[in-house]
Amino acid sequence: MANNAFIEKQDYFGLADGNNLVCLSSEDGRSNEVAEATGQDGSIVAHNVYGEKIAPSNEYAMKAVTISKAQGDIALGQIEEVTNGNNDISICLASLEIGTSAGSAPTFSASGE
Image (cartoon, rainbow, N blue to C red):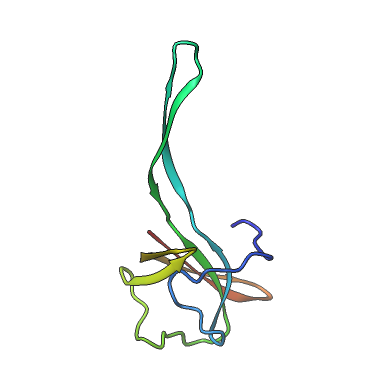
């Protein structure tokens, strides 16, 4: 993940509670397609961006052995409504990963579309 220590982190999956799970980083995984048309002289005469989507991910620090969400269980396929900039979007939780390392608190990663 990119170093985004100075950027406000977006909890795309609504899992961080400040106590048991703390959001360490976030990525929006933004992608799109671009179509361009060129004129006879080779210059670009039309430029269109389409197919914009995000595939967000978060990394959390685990501060407790038991993790649960105030709204209930954490489940793959759950839909979270979040605000990203000025847009309200629906994010589906697609994968979860727990990482451990000697001398460090475990980390919990979530990603989706």
